[in-house]
Length: 180
Image 1 (tube, rainbow, N blue to C red):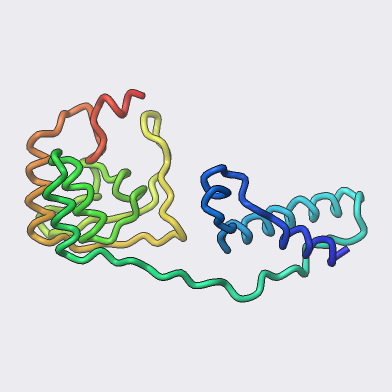
Image 2 (cartoon, helix red, strand yellow; image 1 turned 180 degrees about the vertical axis):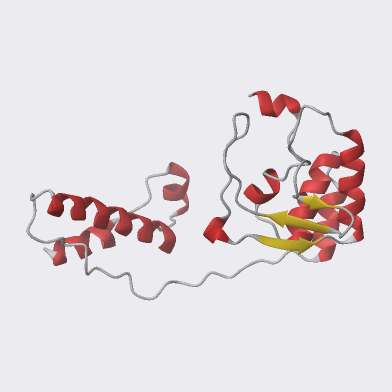
């Protein structure tokens, strides 16, 4: 019944000991994930003839809770950079902060190809099919884009490029990490 489906979603609680100890509730995104999965499972059961109707089909979560964002100021970012010992990590943090890349997008930047254009001062983020040696990369929501780099980022990446080892195609991975 739809009432049971709604009660099930409402009764979900965290299972992580850290969340339980802090008294945290499941986030809206976690509840939405559970609801999507329940809809899929019960739709399959309906298609196979085990159910007449999917009780989760009409369940809605209602209004989502808004959480306050904490934006890192330039001063806070500089304090982080001052405590970061590695050039590679400083460049990674800089690309994420100043260019607005997601971690996965930054981690998948490669020296070869059209990812980093030093002449134009741009970073390109795009889908990449798999090859014999590299896994595929898919941009979230297919948001392929080109973002500008400031001079600080360009300088950091140029220093990193000068130190790169030829057998590692990725900007922010070391060959040791690539072999794991």
